[in-house]
Image 1 (cartoon, rainbow, N blue to C red):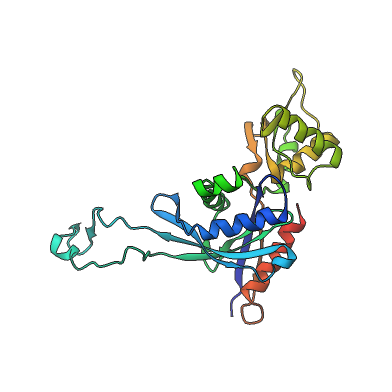
Image 2: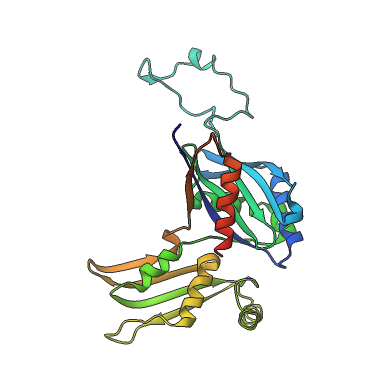
Length: 287
């Protein structure tokens, strides 16, 4: 039997104050909302299942279901007549308003300790892109009832380490911008986290942008502090660079390189759930 591909991506979700209990309540509230949110066009998604059996290990699992919402009042096409569908034909169409076609399901899990959400990116020919996953959880988080209870959630796509290497491998770097959202205590060293957190709070700000610009005719060289900022930004913001390679002027953003963990497995000897859990642990271990 042929092997199947399974891939996962990650989102870093930040609420304040940080506590496993807050993230537990947050995920449960998103599910309880039972509200479809638009991904794009006529494609929607909602959380359809929550599994709390591993909550003692700071893990909540669930299912995201994506589907197409049909506008029954829209224009219908008859491929047989190659024209608009006639009214007598439309009368034969009876679709309950709660039933939607083109459904696809994807596992996800929320680690309430490190607030990393891992989702199935590719499974059995179905795909949920990191951008789509971010849109789903961002729009769920923007529901009035959720904002009222938890404030505004900060959601960032986890980015690949190779994107930093692409930046610092440029032949010449004119500028590098580090965008850092309000820090996570588990990313920064204690002293730095406290300094940045206090600075942001005092300024009523939610993020810091640090920009390095090269001196005239020079190229920026990576330092240890820049490396630390970059690694933090991969889960907590973004890094952008302007520079030159062999093809000329380029702009690189780490947001264009989401972190994906993937593997192939034999469904006769391994279950999808076990393979997913292995990839989830791999994604979480590389914060």
